[in-house]
Length: 131
Image 1 (cartoon, rainbow, N blue to C red):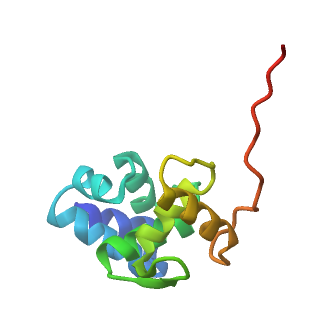
Image 2 (cartoon, helix red, strand yellow):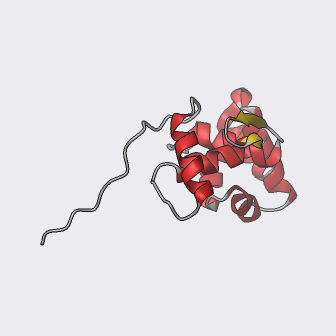
């Protein structure tokens, strides 16, 4: 038997988390590339997660999968009820300061103060010029 679920079972065994099972199921329904596109990540990341070889932030992957495919939500102090995938997207954007929109500024402040965000708050870097 081959396919995403068989690959995940072989790699994870009985300890396979439910979100990895969901990821494998979604890949079987469409394709690894389409699932990766919906998550906003690469197909290589999806492949590594299924094969239990991903060395990155598995909590981020879990948030994305749960929010995108499992309808998991959280209570955001700034936006109200949002999916964990949307939350993770704002946290990623909050790593760098940008004032391109008022919403981005508001969410940058909110995400940096949020307990879910593991990023330590930092002041935006100021540009210096030599005259």
